[in-house]
Amino acid sequence: MPTIGKQQLLDSGAADRITRFLLVVYLLVMTWILLFKLGVQFSYMAERRINLLPFREVIAGYARLDRMETLLNVFIFVPMGLYVGILFRNWPMRAKLAVFLLISAAFEILQYVFRIGAFDATDLVTNSLGGLLGLLIYFTIEKIMGSPGRAQRLVNSLAALGTLAVIAFLVSVKLGIGPIRYQ
Image (cartoon, rainbow, N blue to C red; front, side, top):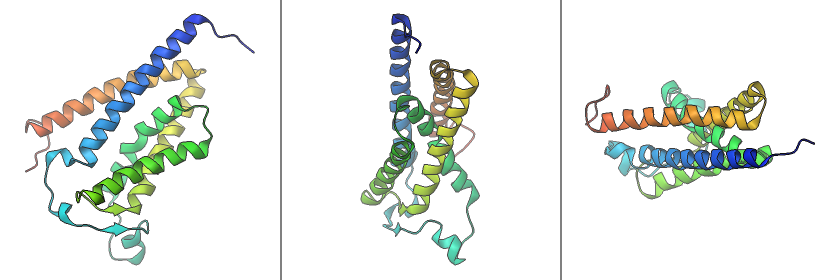
């Protein structure tokens, strides 16, 4: 079994701190998007609805699958999968999947409780799929890079750039200078 040198442990600790910081920023941005709706008041926000059957409207034939919403729900949880893959690498897969489901459920419950959205089981499924996709992406990066440390440094670098880009985009939208306008 290879030994781990003192410098590798120091580098690993620093990388973990960076990953935890990026996770906290990610969760704050998610909260702003999912709970505070970017500071926008939507007409549906006063409704209190619960949908416990994923894709109920689609299955019943009442509605078509909103592909954009589905993709966004998957996409928004991909970083969660990357961070869970890095920070909880020794956890069993079912525990990692439980993290995605529990965090998604927490957002859904809070949206319902504070009347800022509905509790929707479809979102639980699509968000969890996004987390799983992020986890699979991390496993692939780790395999290609040949070491968890190198994979973590790459993900941290890309996540830092992505985080800055997303924050800049959201701030530009909020200030009314971005490519998207809302009222």
